[in-house]
Image 1 (cartoon, rainbow, N blue to C red):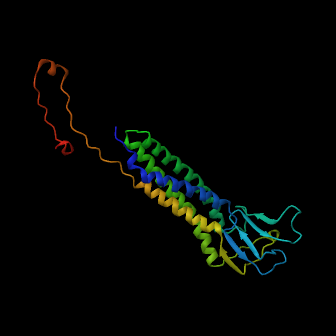
Image 2 (image 1 turned 45 degrees about the vertical axis):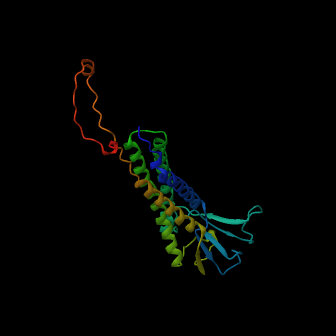
Image 3 (image 1 turned 135 degrees about the vertical axis):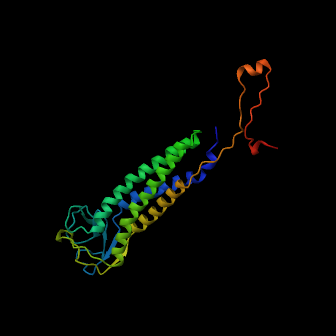
Length: 238
């Protein structure tokens, strides 16, 4: 049985990269600080900053719009709302797709590494698990990178969002800047794509075996000399 553990050190490291990348995708989905709006009217947004995420819009305020136990005013952005811009719609859909693909990809490569470290002597299941897992991890990184870059472009071009009145947001920001959500999303995508490429690069070693032709049971007993010719393996020649 071939010993394969030494052939998968890079893939073991890639599993950690993929797991960290997928975890950072979860963090990116939960962060509200994708786009940071700077506003001039401090009567409602007293801090002068509002955070626009893919699920919520939040800002600190000392105005009487909060209840006694609130320190931050937040409004939810729904997929079905008419004011929701296409980059946020795409982010809500594709980031959830990335979570599902990343889970499936990591599960596939874990199965492949289990076969490697537990000594399965068939290369096909290992290669199939690494290939499918690598493709899924690359798709995960791409699914996360598209909405992140789209929102990054909106920040660079200072694009506005027509929020309804109950959001208490201005019609346009004075300036926009990149929030931690976009930065974390880009880093997560890089880790996932790199991890997927490492798994796709896996190649099973070529195992050299001597050619052995066992004698028939009756031939040794009768003392019959049988010469079976085969191709010599250079690895076994001194």
